[in-house]
Image (cartoon, rainbow, N blue to C red):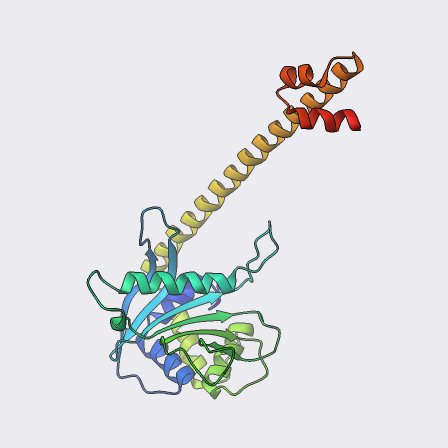
Length: 273
């Protein structure tokens, strides 16, 4: 288990000194202090909405909110072939804002936010070490929509763009467990300490069991769905075969439609074949 593991990433980021240093190096600013709002927080704004699980959610003394995520794989919708990460960030931002703004508060009370993904792949295929997104006017790119919402994709494989030596060493460590700075030595030592903590090991076992249960449930649902789909396809084939037999016997299209529960158009299509 390495830093790219969600569970371990969360526990390392819970070390304030490490997490605060990463944010300062990424944003080129000093942060007085950070507060953990909740690690691995699940936000369900509405009972029937799609909840999101956040790895690490933080606020600093200036009331800027940060959400840090480890992204090992580039998820794809199998049905459409579209990548999910861009719209996931859109949904994360919407849910964070909705959760942050209490009833009766004004919109200008929304805190500045940074959603930061550590990606072990280059989503945009441009070799940038960091891709930073803010809203800008397409007609004049110098005009920025100052909604104070920033999304950052950290490409650990990137070769373009400047990052601090500690951030580059962190990327190297995530990619290959290479320790080449005092900072990554601190991260590595922290990981050893975390792994030797019995409470964390017990929590990881519970976490793994929960993940396994979710996978088993998804597998069972997939089997049930496949079985239902197979039955439906079988019934459709049976109806088609029956319609063909009745057509060969000279029955009318309307009578066959009634007998098989097919539409007249479907029977006409079978007849045309």
